[in-house]
Length: 245
Image 1 (cartoon, rainbow, N blue to C red):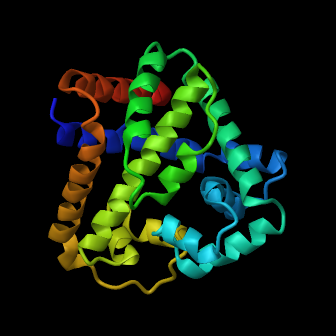
Image 2: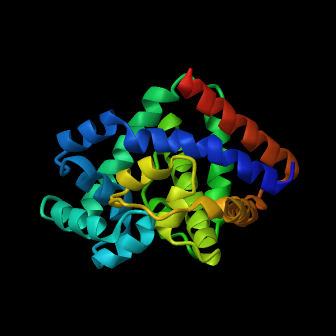
């Protein structure tokens, strides 16, 4: 199977599978129980803590779509409670536990992990800082926790490619959000206050951004052969369906 087709498919399988755990109430609860700051401060430090004790604007750059002043405030708030390195370790642990719970009975765990690991290990770090941060975290030796952490790392890889595609199109983060499927709801979640600009004329440009994202991510998948890419596509869809079911 060609790599662009598989890259396009992964957005709705691995992409949504990993997004579920990041925004799940249980993730925020587990973070608080582990001493993380509550709410979005814990999310921001946990997801991007692998960047290290960097300037707040480095987190702004990695988060890309979040309103910059909100990110700076959340980083400052979170660092009063935990260090970025500790936050990253806590979130990696929560990610693993989520996989152990939600993918424990998924028969394709081991093979999905093997294929994801090959992509993750070979992928270029350019333009994908959050991917590099997650790739640097220790993985369990075996099991669904390892597989799911690799899926989360794969999601960050595509996220980085998407950020590059948005920038290459000359589109601002807010324009990209508003012209996307969740529109103003996503803009509010990411901290952008209304009133919002009219993006009615950006539908074609937004579709082109998605196509560019697929093309950029397709390069990452070239490490696999055509049959392996088809297998990855099927296993990722099956894992998503297993969780949703």
